[in-house]
Length: 324
Image 1 (cartoon, one colour):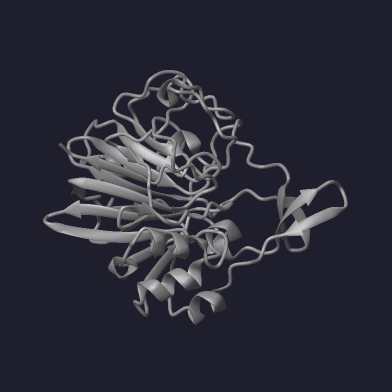
Image 2: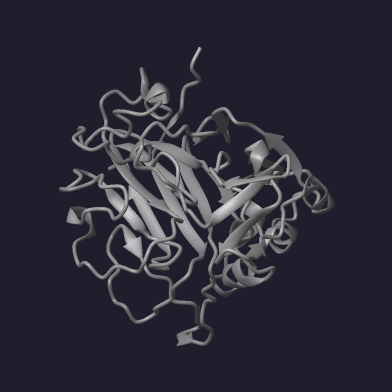
């Protein structure tokens, strides 16, 4: 029996770490808001931009606000510094989730968990997030190794682990952790210079641990938040080539569609954001911009409000999506 993802009235995604910061861009909107850290009426501190990603997700339903922290940034202090600068009380966080096991998504785990101050809080992740060694090949002879995520490190931070390659509903079924997203297309190549070893044999890192979160916004559709985007890009709120642009997952394994059946009707994908690594783009109309690499969205996506081309492109720090 397929679990049912509960509808929520409002979704907020607050980016705590990203690759780029511009306090004077002036390109905010009713949906995407730039953060300006103030003390009184003065801008007295800048946010820290790093090659990393972390986001605080809040959902509003039945008079309650539930909060989840998704990814933890690169450095030990960057995302936590930004939370402090923005005056965010992380003690409200009730659950943790990890998009994948790279160091630019796990580095601030300890500092953030200290601010959450909730011993035994549950972190949901794919079991392949512990994969090691992982590295970047720079030429034929040099390998830049990534610091591994270990169970011992998570335990030392006072965090309880829930490993799952399958979809999991979190926070009273208001947030869906997608689990492993299969690659079913020949255009999803991943990053050719990122490798790993299995049983001593080098191979391209296929990112089995890469996943995303999904929220169902009442009367609107799905809000999808991913951390990396090398896997199943067409399944994360974007269609396959030639597919219906209003459907979150018209092809592939239907990981999102299977959870929509019977409880989201024919609602379109309504919003989303991701931490994917892409060159910074300056196109003034991102809804009409073809997506580089995937060739997926070639026209307007009705109702879709991307948070931003994050993790190399934005620090548009907050997206707020309402059901009405």
